[in-house]
Length: 197
Length: 197
Image (cartoon, rainbow over all chains, first blue to last red; front, side, top):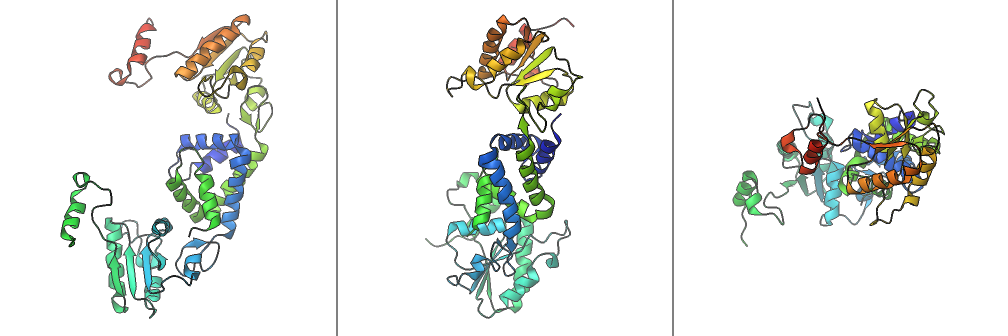
């Protein structure tokens, strides 16, 4: 007895990550109750974004400009490339404000189980970019998971031929973290990588 | 460094119930990765729904038709009115398939704290509908919360003058519920309202 239009809308909303059928119903009702302030602006923003946002051919970031505003920025250090799995990771790093180099978005990690090989990711493209003589360092900022670390090692092997130093993010105790609550792996790594104060 | 269009989109998505800034970012990325299959259809579905869906003047349900398909159905029993707080509750009751009367959506509950009085809800309209001589029974299906029960008592007082029997949903052990895990209030009510087998 829910109308077809509402059912269709709920079905589409429930395809968003983190939303099930019940929360999609709640979201649809919330939208219908806030048509002018939320529903129509969201409809327009979705249409507009789908139209104008393109993938950057350099770093595979998403932006309205091509190349993206990061790749086009002359103020950044062309000597450093930071490899991330996903655009969300790029956003997270940008939010810290402490990185001023360029990025390279892989679009995933190697995974034998899911059948993801090097050619499915932008690894050959990364090797070409790292071959540029201006690039001094490639920072691998992949998740500290099995797939992430496998990919990190594979990339580091691929870049052996290039004249760049390959680094990765430090592992250790998170800022604000309590030692008591940390897992064994993190604690062992933090101990092994200890530094002089 | 996130583009303005994406930031705007994320801000709108994060206004949906149950989505914070981080899940809104995830949802926006998911949408941008599935433009043809999800982003554009969702944009169109939102625009279409905002345009065609109207509130039923009879029961305050939302539908493309006015009066809504429930109020317009001749197969339903005009003698019973079921009072619900929200359209989501109406959908939940319809899904059971075990109610064949009409509905009345209040649009909220009385709440002294939030300054919601009888005139902010559709209670006067309910009293007029219950005054119709064809109506025999008004079922109050409000949440078993303080606000819901206060509203139920208020409505039952309002309908004293009308020639209808006022009932409410039974309270007790939910189907599949384990007695061991039930709260005291539910268990005490279930005991008090015990029935012959």
